[in-house]
Image (cartoon, rainbow over all chains, first blue to last red):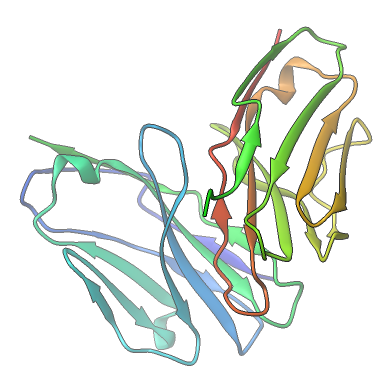
Length: 115
Length: 114
């Protein structure tokens, strides 16, 4: 069955520090999709990125970068030079292509960036 | 695009009352999901539809919960009768399963049952 683990419940950093949020997944499928969502204090869930299982290229978008490693079943998210506006709960999620296609979300990591 | 629209944004009701939550997915999307979020249990998938047909309702907590999708642009989640433990934020999400796999979420409905 599919499962997503985010071992870090809460992280606090000081502004301008780099921070990495860990995500480890389990799946029985050979084709799957990984996602990161951000939930700021206002409560909405914002889609950040999707990664396909057949594409292990890392991705960078401004201060955000993602490291996908199939060998360790991990999809980690790094914020460089963190800012107070990055404070939010971040969710990692997994969707299997061939088994129902529903989403499984991790428990989330609450990131607090202090000024 | 207006994004996923949910109504009401907040609902306060008394135990035993019927509650109906509404969702309008993004135009062109053919999958719709209902989630519940609480501090204790995190984000839980309740039910999802493909092309208006319920595919998996195994997350619906009990018979008091029901969901419908009469057409591609509207879905409801009904709780009858409501109980205090149903208090949560309920999210609706949609996606185009033929093109993307990411879901786009509505703003959520915060339900309080007293």
